[in-house]
Image (cartoon, rainbow, N blue to C red; front, side, top):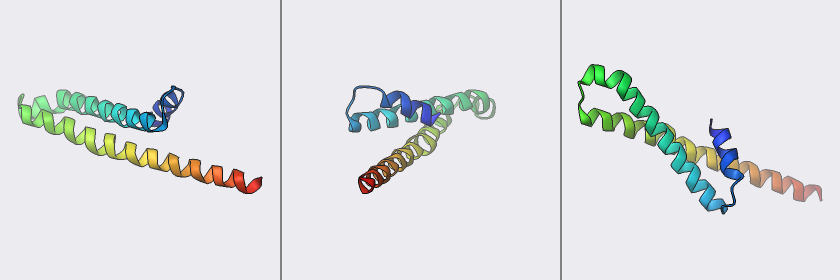
Length: 92
């Protein structure tokens, strides 16, 4: 899923920083929606419509797997891009 979104955003006519920011925003929102769906399935049965638990489900799933893993994904792709460009320069 991350690779597909990364490739879709990569095809846009945005600057590199805007692409990274958009990727972080999209991944955070996707995982927030996943957290909300989990709350609808699990949380409403266990916690009887308490709003604070809904915010916990959304917040934790948006921040940890959404935001942090997206940051690691972006940094990993930046490192790969730098290594390949350095290898291409060495070959020339």
